[in-house]
Image: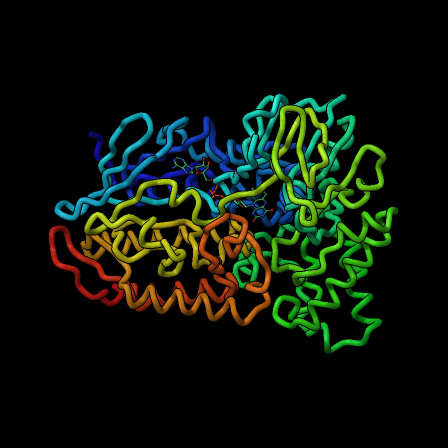
Length: 542
Ligand SMILES: Cc1cc2nc3c(=O)[nH]c(=O)nc-3n(C[C@H](O)[C@H](O)[C@H](O)COP(=O)(O)OP(=O)(O)OC[C@H]3O[C@@H](n4cnc5c(N)ncnc54)[C@H](O)[C@@H]3O)c2cc1C
């Protein structure tokens, strides 16, 4: 059995950066990654049209001034191949690969209370003995496959957007069904429609989507960012979303109708999800939200020629922004094509899949290929796939039976020295995730350094601190409109998953302050213990 100081699970942006920092602390590290390469999300999601909807000058690491100066993005919103190339560049530039084991999944992690060590087991039957475990397993990395009757009888090809074949897929001359209309569907449908003979889009819930209006990077724009990168990165960290989005810090209700319309039109023309920054209360004030939602509804009506299709594509029963807002390139326009049809599976749900197609409301839609754009078991899926057992052999699955509970979204009581990067209870999926990843990794690095300095071996949150944090996260959520939508933020896309609003809505700026304050108070809410010693209340910071 090999012994290391730390096992990091996952080699996406979270795992790569965690490895880099742990090495700096002098720790021996093994990174275990299920894929054959680095990049996580950008390794797996190779569907046509996959791209970032956070501007890539902002969706990139800030920890290395040299890296952020030397890397050149070719588009405002980079596509998946370019982001994957960036992840590979980072792995090479910082010589990270030598500590990563690819094509291997962690299947269990068990805490040995006698020795204060984790026993991490992989699907290659290797057991790694480790002091720390860092779960950098990703919030959107466990693809959700629906379970329609008859699926195995389908004679055609099937794909999930989150597990796209590396060699790509040729849809020329094919009749393709796309099931789902979330972000991945909205990005891929226009691309598939350009190639396929016919595309049938199976929609349960229409989505709000804003045109991305992606453009090639210009030297000028790149210079603007790079000449002031350190200051801009600092500003990003203090925002609510980790994105400099030109927030118009006024209520939508505080301006005239004309001014409101002007603001929305300008944002619509600029493009991208920063549309939600048109006013400061779009996710907290129903009336304000309604004005933004109504504006988008009007755009759909004006874009889609067939009024019945336009109406079906129009979201009406949840506030804009409370499900992940999408950015598209010609999504609504695609429904004006002769080779695209929309199937309303809310009214007529899919009954079953048969050899040559999909049956909904006793109508058979004959297709050659099915693309499942059915999303992910978000935030907890990858964590709970691993059989994690803490003190007393208690499993995380049991502990989180009624929903995830974690202190700061970083650690959970009863599971000492086990950490989550962007876990439930942190801003995570509500933010620019690279900003949130960097913050977690840096906070944890400081925490481990603190433990080294005061010769503490074990750290674990107290149940009381965890309970208080979970309540804080809930209260923050219920001050907004988010819980009113049946979204994957709430676990609503997974049958049987507890309905709990999982991310922390307080904003990355405020969250950072809260984390820093806890660290400054000597890791308040955690207990620390020396090797073989009894837990002690968190000591004051050195
Ligand atoms: C299509 C798509 C578009 C996105 N666009 C944006 C965007 O524009 N802006 C934004 O901020 N965020 C976006 N995201 C979110 C994105 O997931 C994060 O930005 C970021 O890439 C997450 O990095 P990560 O390292 O935390 O997780 P991931 O990139 O998901 O990496 C986790 C890795 O862990 C591995 N893993 C999981 N479990 C195990 C196990 N048991 N054993 C071994 N390996 C394991 C997985 O194989 C994976 O490689 C997008 C997500 C998707 C799916």
